[in-house]
Figure 1 (tube, rainbow, N blue to C red):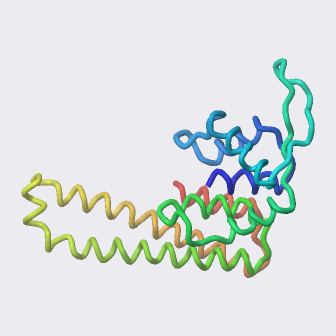
Figure 2: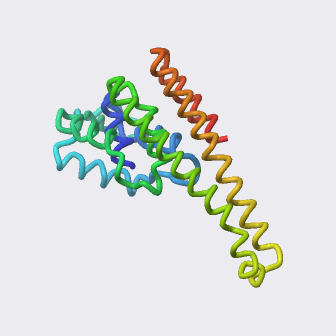
Figure 3: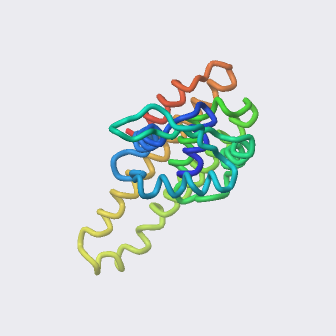
Length: 199
């Protein structure tokens, strides 16, 4: 996911390492931070693979010169492949999808719709899973009661909460699809949908 974020950021504009880390961490939230110890080795690898280049030394900051990174054509191709990949990291795809939508300006309308349609199916799959598991829970009531008298209710509470979140995600992405088809979706609309889905 970090590679996708970095390449998508650099596909928008050249940046120095501090801003790459700041924007990435702002997107990921307080608990999935990208440290300098992880960022710079990744930047070195991306440069070695010819996906990004260092554009000379920038203005000094705190006594150090800041390097500005720029994406190469090969990096743009890799970024596009990552943006369009719907098979990797399915367990974390919810977060990855919204990263992609924050960078939807890099994609054509048909590519955006492809990703949105895939995510609609992803949401529906999660909804079907939780509906089926909640319906199946009573079959295991006796077994679950052995763990704790309230264990079944506690599990049910959690599953129903997750189900509500997936239903909200589905509603948000369906609304996004409608705005895309109407030609009115912007990056701000996508950010608004992602924010609403995270609440």
